[in-house]
Image (cartoon, rainbow, N blue to C red):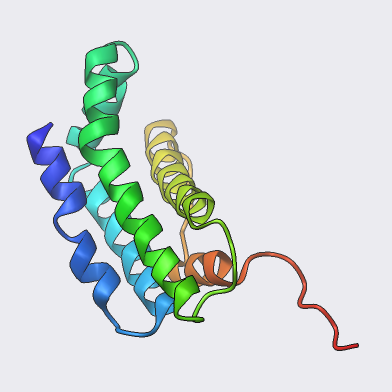
Length: 143
């Protein structure tokens, strides 16, 4: 668990700090990094998540030592973006959860596709970052 926490948490402050003042670019780097981490450490991640489904104490450790600190770091980044006027007003925690869900969903789909002989989803980090930053609603027309 300590190794997973380091793998997940150590890069976050640096990723979210650059490029300064550009939340969309920072989120693109984050998406690229998170998907690359899964690829590099897939056996460890799959084993950890599989075991956590059956061992409540491990699930609690994953939540407490990796998921919640990473979510807090991402939420704080989004809160700063809103406060600085670089991001629209939103619920930063909900946006952070949406980003985590997107990345984990893509990683899991890739594993399922590999195991079944299917084609893994090719994620576009630029599009995912734009989705988080801009949302999916059509812009309001000027009145």
